[in-house]
Amino acid sequence: MENILGISRSHDHFDGLRADRLTDGEAVEDLANKVRGAWNLGGDPISNMTAVLESVGVKFLEGDLPDRIVGLTCQAEITDATSSPVVLRSGEIGVEAKRAHLARDLAIRIFGETGPISSEKEQAVDGFAEAFLIPRGHLINEVGAKRGGMTNAELLHLKHLYGVPASMMLSRLGRLKILPRSAIDHAFRAFARSWRTKEPDPSNSGEGRGARERPQRFERLVRRGLGEREFHPLRASNMLGISIDDVRRGNRGLAGTWPKLYSRTPPH
Image 1: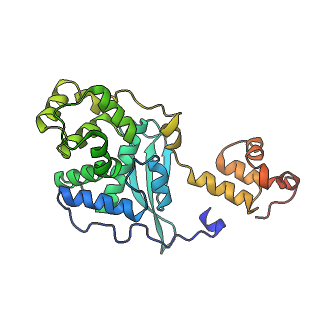
Image 2: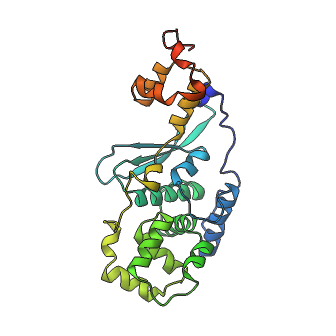
Image 3: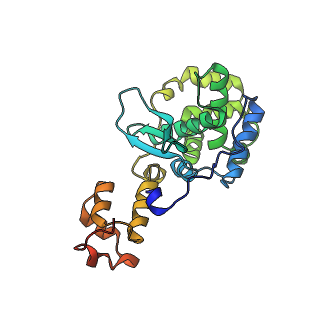
């Protein structure tokens, strides 16, 4: 689709953002803020993590994967000279888990994808993902710099505000020392241990943020190609896996002359 529409893939959105070595916690915070700044994401919660990755050239796919496999990240060769980062995610995982995994995929790409993940690299990846999804300044404005405790209701509100797993939210509060380390340890021993495998109060995948967290770029490009008459609607129907009637309904408006072309020979 990019070739058909003449969209260049030459710009490297990660240029100047890759870390050539693992850094300490504060440097990881700074790097997450640097990436947000380079991509004009501001300091608010990210509404759509999938769209962020698609906007910087990552090809994002969802599909049925074997049990216990949530996804993979790789580099796909397009030509001998060009390649594209690709993320494949299971369509069965929850919204919060999906966003957390995508932030980790981004971190792995920033820190280098090759080789096994050591415990040091694991800490850097987790710290980056948390900082990217839960900006420190925004969180402190929400809850304060130091807290003696926090109710479950407030914690669940925060996890929905930032669209992250409750366990990640709890970890972030501890990493920034907003809550005492002893309170975080007690929470994971007393009631939050199960949060790592079963998300409390999960977001609905078909509503709000959950409905948006899905690959959309390919469909948008197909719709764009239709609007520019680069190919026949029947071909769009095949590419999108939807009926020709659905293509017709979605192609009304400024593309209202298309129905006259259905009987013609496709341009390509």
